[in-house]
Structures are given as structure tokens and as C-alpha cells.
Length: 284
Ligand SMILES: O=C(O)CCC(=O)C(=O)O
Ligand SMILES: [Fe+2]
Image (cartoon, rainbow, N blue to C red; front, side, top):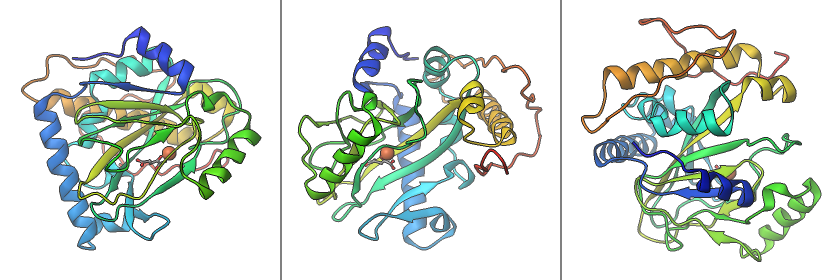
């Protein structure tokens, strides 16, 4: 199965994002499309998933948080894709922990905008703190793809915030580039790279699953989440790997072997897990 290349990692380090083509095989892609559509239908019908779905600036639903806890047959197996385990080991370190996830969708006709922002202003160092964004649809300028300002992950906070303000007045920021992707591609974006997207006026749906990842050592430094959350998230990742192993797609040709970081609990078959694993702050 596809792995990120060293050249792609170098591009990411320079620009704060990188597009990686052709990550998902057709069978996984079809299941992702089917299941994410079912969740969107559930949200639009006011069903259970709607409770976890935020509205954007125009009041339109677009952000389903705690995706794994909204019953579905694709998101945990997607997290267990060997592409993800491999790149996190190489780019974050062996003590990586997948920390949260969301399904973002731009409905056809009038899909939510996402104003220019950085995902996380708490990161003051130059660690590779990033999201892995997996696309089941074409993402184009026409259906309001994500735009990013190359290199802005290295900017000082004040300069970045000035550009966020500027982007509120006029979405077209100088030097911004569109991240156009095809179904089955992935985008990696640094949590400090400036990015955003416009309202979707096209007739096409555009979806993405976002996986945010941290590490035990970074969490000790930045104190984002209580250590218990990291332990629970680590169990959830092991559960995801076991699910994909037990229930592979027929086109899978490998599984990912996670080396359990020191001090983390081992997942045992049949353990009951809280799939929300809510992100309690460090001192809670
Ligand atoms: O998919 C998009 O248009 C951007 C979403 C995003 O950046 C976010 O939710 O933080
Ligand atoms: Fe974002």
C-alpha cells in the first residue's frame, strides 16, 4: 500500500502542506463514500449524528466531530490504514497518538465557508503538528477546495493573525494556492499553516476526514490533554488496527504493526472502549 515519500515530507516541511496522490484503493474509497453520505443524510434528517455536527458562519452544517463515536463502518479502519501509521512514525515519532477526528463536508449549492485560520495557536515550537486529510471526492476550485498560504506555518503569530483578518475582508490572499485533490488522495496540513475555504456554490458535494495527531512527548511539553486522554486514544488506535486486521478490505495487502509507546496500556480483544474519548484538558 502507498507510503509517503521522503520528497513529499520535504515538501511538507517547506510549505506546511503536501498533497499525496492515490492513497486509498477503490474498495475502501467506495465504502468511505457510502458511509460518509449516510452520516450526512442522518445529520440533515436531524438524527443522532446531528447532535455532534457544528454549523459554520452561514449557519449550515459542515463539521461532524468525534466521527468514530458516530456509528459507522469506515472511519476506524481508515485510521488504521498503513499509510497513516507509517507516516506518523516517520514524521512525528514512535510515541505518536492519533488524537481526534472529524468529517467536514461542503453541501452542494450552499456549502459552509471556513474562514482563514490556523488550527492550533498553542504550538510555539517547530514540531510537525499536522492533520492528515483524506478525500473521498474531487476537491476543486469550483467546489470550494481548501486554499493555503505556503510557508505560513513558519510565521510569527502576529503576522499570521494579521493575515487572518485580511482574509476576512477579502478571501483572495496573495500567494495562496488551491489544494485540488482527487478521490482517494490525502492532504497533510500543518496546524499552523494558514488555510480556509469559500462557500460552495457548485452543485457538487465535497467531503474530507481530518485526523489530528500528537505525541506523548509533545503533550508533556504543551499540556494539551490530560494524560488519561492520550492513554484512551492509544487504546482506540490499537482497537482500530485490530478492526482492520480482523475485517480487512479484500484489496488490502498489508496491515500496520504499532510498537506500543512505553507506559501505554495494551488493548485486549473485547475491551469496552469509550469511542468519544473526550478531549479533557491537561489539569482536569
Ligand atoms: O475542509 C475545509 O474546507 C477546511 C476545514 C478546516 O480547515 C477546519 O475545519 O479546521
Ligand atoms: Fe483547519
